[in-house]
Length: 182
Image (cartoon, rainbow, N blue to C red):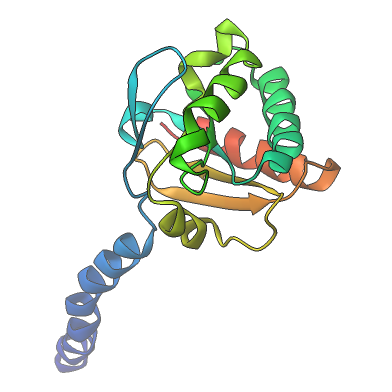
């Protein structure tokens, strides 16, 4: 009887620390900072709020040349996802470094190349470029940078570069696992 009581008291410190460990792990899941822009459909978009309750794929590009890999990712994922109601795909060209004098012309030129049905989720970002570069682990200026968000707005996966078979399979697997979780 005495040994059972002692064994239970040995576990007491473990049970006291367990909630703290759980809170610590929960807090270590990176939360997506808020970013805001106006979509090509004319609506203000604040992410991750605009995708709340859904899985979101954010595709960032930082240069004119990044148009190629960002478009490749968008085309691949839109083909794969179709119009899945629980997934939002956003294309986010980051244009803060474009001189203000030319920025509206650049945005207008990009808008002309975006089909009407994709304009709601095509959002130029014109502030916070340095922070976004840190967030995505910016390395190669002409790469596409993807962030996959869980339904709570937490960052689940980051990847950069052009899509290839391995990276595409990895992204699809992450999206599928997040869709299973409700």
